[in-house]
Length: 344
Image 1 (cartoon, rainbow, N blue to C red):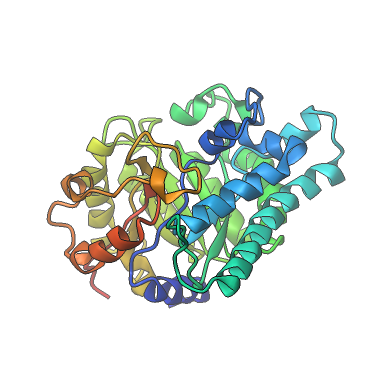
Image 2 (cartoon, rainbow, N blue to C red):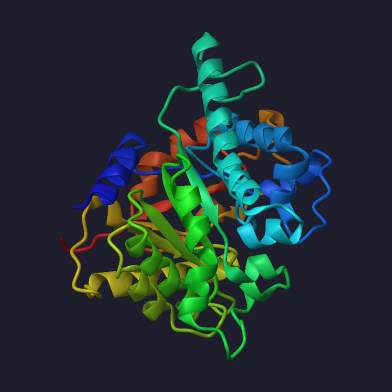
């Protein structure tokens, strides 16, 4: 097991093999009054209202999230430069996204120390625990802000070298800003997965990463590329500790996870699986239309019927964990990691 896998294995063990990731950032920012009608989307708040980002991070922590994801999904050096910012200013804005999340974590820990119990009168979760900050890296299509992260169509002239050059400095700056891991999100095609996997090695990134793809048919990633081939690309990097699915209709999740499981069980890439790689990111899908709001009165009681159809016979893991999640009512959005029974 490599260093990256060891970090995540230890974290997941402390979480009891189930960890909760925060939910939609942009939705909550808009609920607080932010105007995100901009090519930068949620990253616009790094310029206009960083305090709102901090507030949303804290809301999710008080709802029980174990991992918070930075406001850098659509934050790119090129995007900031298009707004008139210098290279130095653009890089500082990337760093700021990580700093804000870390500040929210420290504020949360302070509130935990001051609290007399693990829950407040309004059922906020104030529980001292390990919390990870994940630096979000969106696709090239997210930068284009034309919806192409949901098609994966970057044109016939696109090549690996271009994508690596586009992402290289951004990934390095984020990784060096102090997050615990990198989250490559909504990856729409095999080529961009290759770019991310190679950059982790070329830039000697020494923190774990996960890669999540999106699908619109339950078989392929949105570009039409083979999901198993995309998973195999992720397997080419020892820095990538988990592969999964996001921004995908829930009805497709079970078959997609089975497809990922099949690739892994066949030992694609001639790799052995440590504990950290026995977990698969499934999805962040909305459980209820209610807003998070930082108040438990607005939080739904997560219902097993929502989750069960996507589990099938994949794992008995939730049986032991479900009541704990129900008791803490931990998040509006739930990301489940299923323990897959791979051969070591």
